[in-house]
Length: 459
Image (cartoon, rainbow, N blue to C red):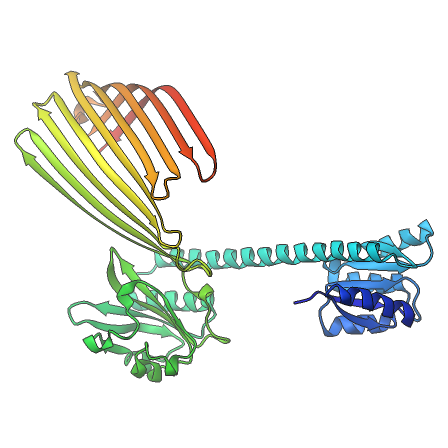
């Protein structure tokens, strides 16, 4: 969209010349012949720059500039035109709020350059103002979420809790109707939790349906993905009975999940102007893990598997989902009560679907613990790390080792079993070498650390 410039000059020849030059450079021009007409134009529509003649019939250009500053603040650039190079006159213009001056007859190159500079200033101001408004909106949202979390801890009755959460979420989203619908796995039933904000109880009690196989073509709440529809009555992915019951024109549905299990749905309806992606979470994460351990005489074998998924919902980044997989195996050996050792092997893999990038990190570690006497023990760990990716742009190697001498003691003789302390001295050495050809840097770091400390435990 071209920048809009208001030219205020009673001289038709000068105004026509300025309009012709700036129109040629792609700007949209509007002319006013007096200060009064300029203020009227500004009150009707927005402009990005005002070219203002200092001498005008009626109120002067200086007084017009003062009124612009009073009404619109410093955000609207004003470039004043004058045929008098008198310094006192220019000082009066700057005091009135002008951003810069152009002398008549106007030099075309100076005109174009100063117009571009003023429009850059306006663009930067608008961008900063937009960022400030977004930050203020996020701060208000966080304050509302803080209120929800604070009030949550003070509520014991389910009905009071449902009323508080739905009313606060409705205010956060700006929707007149908001409800929680809970899922019952044995009966496969989704039902509204009473009360619902903006929905009478007699209607909310009827918000209930059983998830059947024929519903597979509809929106699937177990996917964990939010769903936005601004044509609810004709949307084939929604349950038509529920849409008609709640007289829904637009709807946003957000699944509630824990450890991969569906708990229910948060639903908001009929927001004025419709819902947008800003009304749903920017990111949704799902995590799961499993661990197994076997004891075979003096030997121990352990296995851990973990999965996590980060589903991005930011506009323009919907495809940049991140998946992380972690697998670890531990082999341990126990020789009586004084000595044990273990070897750990792990592989972590991070995958960015949008970039097609897959990063891998492998770790190998050995840990030894030896009780010297009493509660005095010597421990040592040596581990190596290597990382790369499928683009062959990353090559990282690291080694870390430490040796620790520690001794335990009881805090009191009467409570020796549940109140204990431990002092330690630790020596560690670390070395990292990495090369990233994508960003063009190499690093080689080495460090040695000696630390001591005290830990206390009360059970």
